[in-house]
Image (cartoon, rainbow, N blue to C red; front, side, top):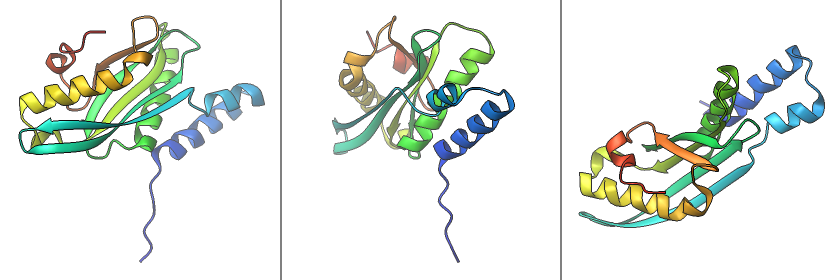
Amino acid sequence: MTTVHHDPFLEVQNHLTKAATRLNLSGVVTKRLLVADNIRNEKLKIKTEKGTVELDAYRIQYNNARGPYKGGIRFHPAADESEVTALAATMSVKCAVVDIPFGGAKGGVVCDPKQYTEKDLEKISRAYVQSFLPYLGIDVDIPAPDVYTTPQILSLIHI
């Protein structure tokens, strides 16, 4: 049996290409829609109640043509670079479609939040923000809650 690798970002790129063709967008505009502005990766090293862990973390700033990047930070075991990039791309489209002055971004930490205490989740959140702080801010990139991140977790973040 062959295993088919699902690539969420490739899937989004295919949809964007089809939409661009139907809208008769130029090749230059289409190319711009298919590539993220910034793909940022970090390793978060956190001392948890169960011991020290190293977690992969991402902040994808996809497109800010309409305004500052905006998008949630998710804590999930499947939050790999392709998934987070796909979500950032769709956030860009969503903001444009509803005509709000934001671009698209998304963040992710590869972890199962159900395995961590509230204190550990606070440490993970703070480590995430510390790692990506140079690229965040009200006029640059505005993080928001997402899967397994709550407004309470994000209230710990002071940018």
